[in-house]
Length: 479
Image (cartoon, rainbow, N blue to C red; front, side, top):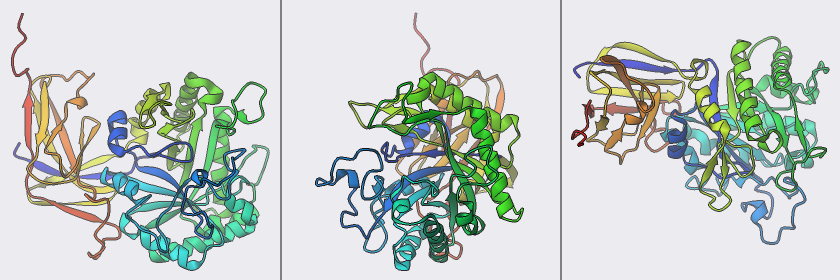
């Protein structure tokens, strides 16, 4: 091992993002998700609410002892997400910031979905912007599904007020945190017979002022969960064809484009799934496979990213269902295997380009999960390895890729076992490959004291790890 090369991490043709935690499930640490799926996502979506003018806040509203029993999921004084504990008088030592740091340490960006009381002051919005400054490129989805009627902000304000608030929030938050990219999530085209989007007159200015357009679409959904059971003939669930859902998303993009004078912006599906309560576990897996297949077969380069909702769910909207006896344990669903294969396809995987030969020490730059500079180390295998591991002497925080499998090294870790990259795969002998190393922020935050700290994090790698490769067991098998 006498050569190293520069490498660049670039965006995928269609980014794979993942929801992690909501009103239906708790946050799952990124170490676990990485082990289950084998690669990081472009971004991880968190869902929180901010209603600081309410006397119950910052308690999670469903956990307030004096609160009456709800009749449906959104039958509370404010939205039943976990509370955003920053803002005026708040602290970034709590949630969602601890989860945001976990996400960024693991080489992913944050999508913060935040429902906000539309009557908060400018000072509240400025404080949110100040909170978000250290987190590099961050996607902020404000008051999502804003043309619906279920969230509390839609019950307190007219659609025009909600749209105007979105524009006000974008201006103030981005003034304090230019690193933030804003996502407008509205219903879009909800019927293929419609020429216009739902409430497009009210949200036309927001369409022009946001950074990113998005819609949430469910191939099937049981919105009555957990207050009833979806049975045939019931009125609290729905199932739609995959083709229709895809066409609704495409038509929504085309209408966004029209309202913006033909000037394109990135288009996201901020939530997609098929509810196992309606489709069954096997139907869910098949619906998801067909949806991502359609992105490829239609060559949908107008679609910049898709967020699967979500990793673990108390109902049947997750890659795992939360174990009813152990809330920190998940039960894998058939869709997990399908999704794992999907996110390793070339269209949904970030590309890595190789540069020139370099020498140590080398400064690695982390801009985002779609813009990072690392190193590549050529490796040679005479035969199928029995041992392949990295031995470190430093406190680096690294994301490591080998043969399409990604590994995380925390500052405390000293030995990283790379053998899972070979499990279930036949390695021809001899063979050559490359080990790639990137350095996302060790503490999950950027250093704002440096000139470009809003956008970039730097780490200087002084020494390479020792690479231990053995193509035979330590001792031979005994008869």
